[in-house]
Image (cartoon, rainbow, N blue to C red; front, side):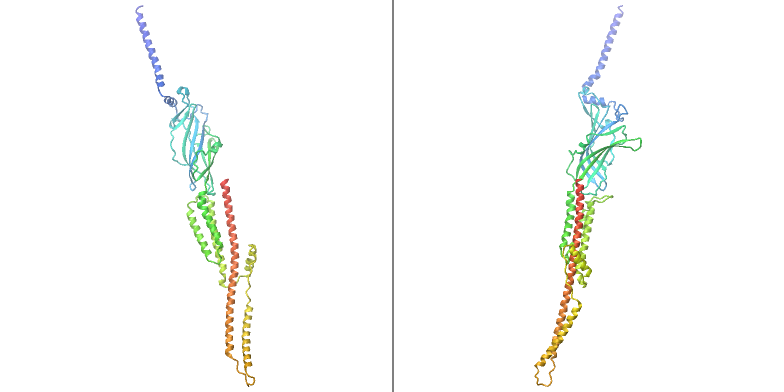
Length: 483
């Protein structure tokens, strides 16, 4: 019996040593973990067995809902020729990761944690209208909350294709879409929703830089589903960025100079139609407008599918200047028609000086009739008779002066009769010259009256056409500006 006592004591001692070693071994990791920072312990806890290549759901039938939000920060450029819009936006998205959840009480009451984006699963949501890689800053972290919500905030410089309608330039309103969708996953895997209410997204201009050429009118949203094949359906969220151009610069630099030139062309009608200064004045205006169009050609947007209405306006204004110049040339030609010694035709006198003058409220333009050709012949015969009468009268007076007792009367003084005849012929030629000059002056006055009436008629037609065209354009631009 005594031999078993030492063996029993030795066995008890060994078992006690083994139990103490196991207790120390069990308490070692807990002591070490208690001494580590809570952020490190939480990060190791979340990412120890995390598989970032797998969609983070415990039931594969459950879709991952990604809520997105867009806030427009600035409109960087609008390229009408290439149909490209460059914007700077603040993009936000969040989703629920079922593998990134923890109890805050176990980790020093930590409720959210920043984790590198490369370490977790991120949805493959892209913008369909992307045409170029923008210069966006890289944000390498996301926020994760204790219930598994992952928040990804990042600024983006977005270069997208946009169908730009420049017909209403510079009073145009553009509507460009940003379509966010998953490039690979169908709606059974990834669904997309809106983070905020559509009304709040539409009216949010809190961070928009409002000092550029473009004004942000609002951001509209629309959710829709589309399918490429009958079996695959994708979710997409559209953000319609509605912007309006500020037209003040273009009104001052494009419209006002054109309006001033057209006003000067209207004022040019008040120059006398029989003066050559009007033609040179209108030619100068036409050349000045041509130079103006060359200068502003680089300012006007150009596309292959259309021309802005203001470009048509400039072309029509130049055509009106050409028509005005042609009207002036026609009027000057009519005014100087007397150089050809052609009288005004009766039908033209009746049409212009009577009908058109009454239509323009100018009253009937009275014209003096030229004396008929028979009266001139009568006057010539009267002068001849007067010369004969004077010569006969001179002869009778000489006979009276001769004494009655003489036998034969003296011959009549031929020198006196010839002098009277020559004087009367000269007076007749002077009278013919004056009559001819008066006829030319009357002819010139007739053509001047015709030219003046036609000038007023064409001026009023030109003015009405210009006013109607201008009022139509101003009305259209006003409707587009405030619609």
